[in-house]
Structure formats: C-alpha cells, structure tokens
Image: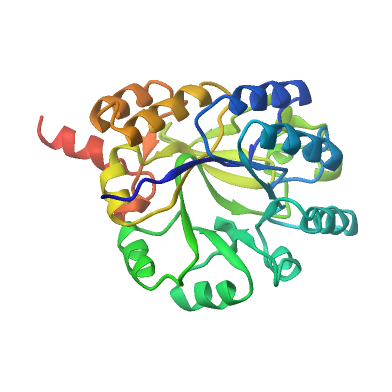
Length: 306
C-alpha cells in the first residue's frame, strides 16, 4: 500500500488583521488538515496577535482535533524577539518549528520540527539534528525530487519528512524591509504597509512578467508552487506530510482539493484544473523537477503538444 501523507497548514506568512486571522483559523478548525502551524515567522513588528493570543488559539485548535506546532521567526534581530522565542520553545505542551539555528539550539534535547529555512541539504545534517531531538523536517523548497529521493533513502529512523506542496515560495529573508522601501519608508517607520497586501506585493520585470512578491523582509515567488499533480510520485517517495501555505482567499477550497485527491475521491488532473482557478498569479513547479523555479512543467508539456 502506498504511503498516505497527512496534510498540514503552514503558518500564515502575511500580515493580516487580528479578526481576519481568528476567522481564518475558525474555518481551518473544521477543515481536513491534520497539523496546524501557528505564529509569526517573518517580522516581529507584526504584533496584532500576541504570544498569549497564539497560545489561546492553540488550545482551541487542539480541542478541534488538530496537532498544533508553534513556528518561530526565521530572522531574529532584537532581545525582545529572543524573549518571545524562549517562551515558544519552553511552552511545554506543543512542538515547535525551529526556523533558525538559534531555535534549533534552544530545542536541543526536545522533539521539534526543522523548518525549510534551516536548510537541511544532506543526510549528514539530518542525522546530526535527529540525534539532538529532531522529529520532523521540512524539505528545502529549492531542491528537487531527485534530491529528496536520495535523502529519503538515508533518512534516520523515526524522523518524518514534510514537503512544501502549495503556496508562494519563501525564497529569501533580509534585514531590510522591502515593502517599506517600496514606499520610501524606513523599516523602523514602515507604517505597517504589509497590512495592505494580504498575499504580498507582486513585482513585475521590465517585460511585465510577474516575477517576485515582497512580503516585508521576505522575498517570495510571484507564482504559486503547486504539487497537486505530483501526488503519485510524492507517495512513492514516502513523504509523511504535505504542507499547504495559507493565502488570503480560497485556502479552504485548496485544502479540500488536496484532501479529495489524496483520498482518491478526485483524480489529480481534474483537481489540478480546479486548483489553477484559485491561484492568484499562476502556478510553478520547476524546482521540483530540477529546473528554474518559475517553470511549470505540466503547462510546458501541454504547450509542446499544440
């Protein structure tokens, strides 16, 4: 019998109003995701949700049957951020997704998840972290299925593999806030411009190709990474968890399509066609195939037949 991956909902990468965020998670509590990641991973100035608010939300989601994991910042720059990190790492109830090596060190000896930004590129790193408490790792978004196959063959016993399967790709982080810079504002007086862009600020190249999305200090792909059509090959690779990264609209429908395809209630071709209508700019899967990240191999194959 082929492996049946669980579904996870990654942390919200954008800055949403508190009421919007709470309404979103109320909807997600009734969705078919198994694991929910909570917390701010991009910018500590996004503080409409306090740490205690995240803790309270975790209890509500746990009561609805979800496994809750707290996600940490990928780039820490202040003592206040370190204090919040300690509170998350010492919560004593829920696992933590460590998104930088500082969090990895704090979680040493405890079970934790290593996020994609920890950059686990080989089995030696994976084995070292597994000996220190790692229970699940998120495959780096820029690596290919060929690399994943090799790492799965050498994966330590007792370690789960999670694959970023849907969402705008988190590509890079910087000390500079690009969204503020777009408005000629300093980072310390950004006026919370990220609130105006619930799916990030899309950038176009000189030829009008939509290229990147700005999300505060995070740079994302403009296109949405989408592996729904690759479910069969993902099963063969024994991936344990598929991650769906939230978007401002239609996340519930995205989850439903993935869930139905995993259960065999909908074929992946039909599911991929329906999913394409829910994507803000367009989809990509180039990294998965070892090509340029912006490429969409399924579309390219279809066009070659015309």
